[in-house]
Length: 303
Image (tube, helix red, strand yellow):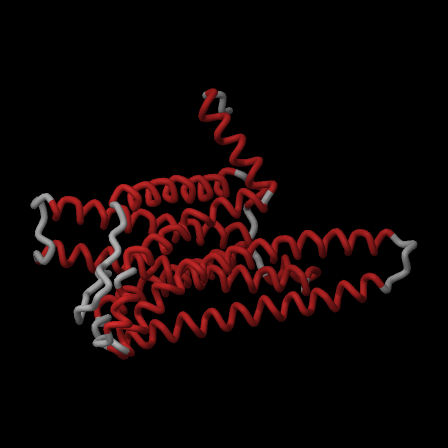
């Protein structure tokens, strides 16, 4: 997705050094691959929630790989090894844009699936294992990946259309609204349930177990809320960029914001870099798995 200037303004394009893009891309790629491998290797992480987190990490991996490869192509183009507007280069650019859009749509759907999973975990605990079976989880993931791939291909094919661009922006805003509503509703209900638990007789051990379970579940919900907030912060400037293209393409003041396009791309790529750090910081099980994997790779003592 290239930044195409429509009109001149007093604001020159802000350039970000190519090595910075490479560094962010390679580090985020390594981090997200580590998350995927950790979830696959640790049987304790074979649960619906971690499957959705693994899916989110896989989408982040695609985003990191795509942007790194795109920047590599730009380097080759700058030294005359590729044509920026050649037929094969344009087709390859469309493929990379499709993968990037797929990773974005997949992240949205992954957050929505995780939010629903947390809601069921907290408020339908007794029926959770009957509702969220691994078979249903695999089916949900299959639908997510198929839908994201098809939607991304269609969007890139017709992205020049204002209708498609508008649908893309509306999808982003509506998805954010739905997920935000679900999280707010979840925390409000959790507060009501906490008060009910606090009103229970203090003698029984059931109250302590309920409190520990609620605390653990809400900690997981809080982690995912932090992840979602990071996603919004990193992707919102890019969508504001798209809105400005549609609303005021000829306005020099809007062009000043559009001159920051490469910074928006840095933010976008940073999302894939920050997510694994949040996983590691908030999840003791993942931290332990990472530690074992790293120690095994260092000492070559994996069993």
